[in-house]
Length: 270
Image 1 (cartoon, rainbow, N blue to C red):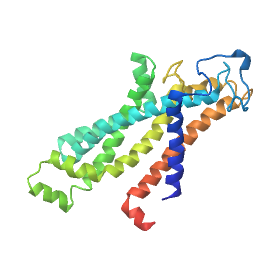
Image 2 (tube, rainbow, N blue to C red; image 1 turned 30 degrees about the horizontal axis):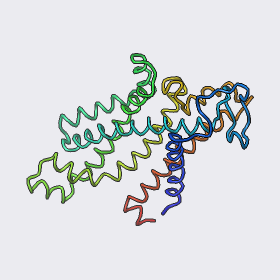
Image 3 (tube, helix red, strand yellow; image 1 turned 90 degrees about the vertical axis):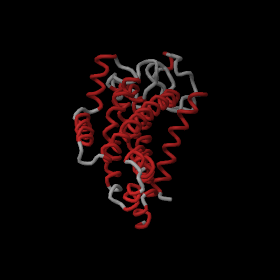
Image 4 (cartoon, helix red, strand yellow; image 1 turned 120 degrees about the horizontal axis):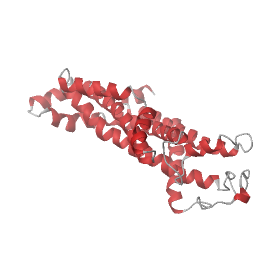
């Protein structure tokens, strides 16, 4: 097993464990304010110090992992649930009107980054974690559509697919029974990459006030609140930033490791 896969699994599992544990326990109540303990440096009592409200930063990071992981997970689910069928449909109708409509629709979505989509959505419905999920999820749809279409197109010319056509199977059945299982490894790897990008996007949206709103903890909002205190209490910004960096790094390493592990050509070359 490659080192990148092991390290990626360890970092990703640590973030997931913190999120799950925070559902049951955190070192301190994340809603409890203690102005007398504001901006305390890291110590044995407060592992990562306290923020400008006296809240324990370690507890906030643990609870913030819930928001980041939940938003990214649901957004990736939206991308897979809508993008993969569209990609398979486009590949099954190569050269036809359906493929042209799907791919031009993908190009249209790609023209608007997730931040722009979030601004448009929040202008109508207001900022929230749900709207951040919608914005990131919409941006994920063309990503998975392109991956699914590219993988499927490479299979439609193979003999076992032609044999299925000769056996009388329609294109929808071939796509679900033969194409989809054979591109699952591509989708898994892309899913881990988009998951990491989803966490980064959620942090960015929360940083500019378009993501999860108070009192829901968020790594991005913790960074936004800390930007005026970096010189006075740098730990307030360092630890949420490290949480984002290590989680995104872990998921990217996990994606690279899964790609190497699931691709037989890379396994043989290794």
